[in-house]
Length: 385
Image (tube, rainbow, N blue to C red):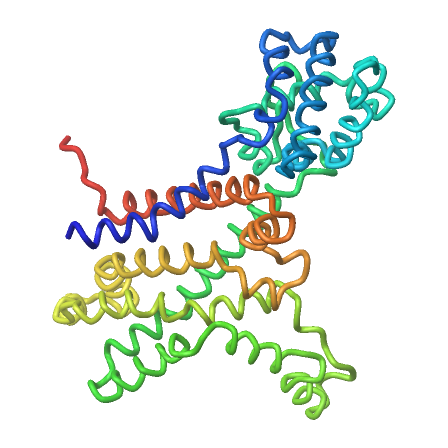
């Protein structure tokens, strides 16, 4: 097992762990502003001391000279990191570095001439907090929270809050997809489990058919089916049910339908396995004792199939949480899920810290769901009474 474990650790766990570490790691600001961070070490969060401005001037002069000499781009990287917490600092920090390049320039007056934000304690608190080596800034930002100048955790302004809304939307869409898949999958699994062997084999093959096709072609088929000049609109217009083409794409219903279509086999197969191993003589015994079909199902079949139901719900819910392509191609702006934001910050804005923080929040949600599943279904080891 050792070679396999080493391969998994090197090729799978190490890259994931390295990415998730970026959620708390801070390495961009400290190399550029070491004197500034030292000057802020004993600061109480009140009025900004002149020593901090003097240290800032020395740090920026040295970093700018180093960038011009070897092209390391330290000021630009520090500015990009600060910009994530202080919008506009991508240009403010380099501009301040240029103005402070003259050793005779008074530090405080020169910095304030560039931007009034240098007079705000919150600006210096962010610099101190992002000085590393670790900070909770990205994790708090992923929850629409931040720290003020004195270190207290407060909510961001309502117009800036977006992540909690997207996370709740992701949980809601995943929950709806799981419930719909369960309502559709349980009867289908029962039909396959009770069908004759030959028919059961065909039904099982048709159920797993969506797994044989890649996600992108299936989503493309949904687009062809639901677009304004697609098959569904053409059929409805031909039957006279609609006077004009309907808008079926880029809605939450479309996202749910495509999600259920993609994940339904993962609900059916575990339930089918539980029902297939069920001793159906128990159902006949219940009927012989006067139980109605509903009572037999509720008190015999359903309890014995709960492990399959729990496994199917877990598989569908966790996979729906991480859906990226389906809401991106079939959903509108109000249907985007947390994976879309992770992709946006990782690829478009190259803010890997915030992308990793969002991934940590998503991973935490998955672990909570898995823990609840272990407790409710009974796979967790119980303590003796």
